[in-house]
Image (tube, rainbow, N blue to C red):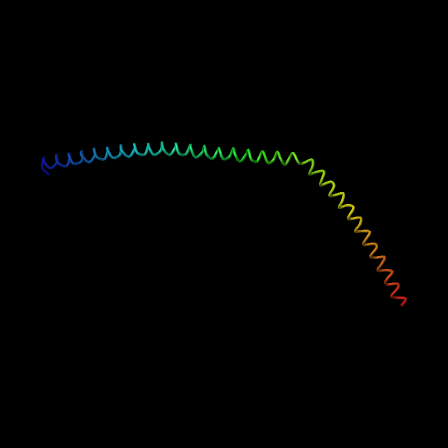
Length: 113
């Protein structure tokens, strides 16, 4: 290889290295910009999620407060319901006994006939 050819290839490699360095620098700058923008977008997204979370928690807290406020009334109503159920159970037992007595009498009358 002649000295002239060596110089040509050396210059070609040097030019390619410079172009490569410029492309790498440009790519790094673009990547840094994308990362900065992504970070900014991510912060906005996280902010929106936090705001939605706060609204949800406020709504839950408000509903829970309304429910807890009514708990004593609910307890009173449940107590009344259980008392009524107890009375109904007693009435059902009396009806069962009356039915059994009626069945026994009916069987006695039928057996006499």
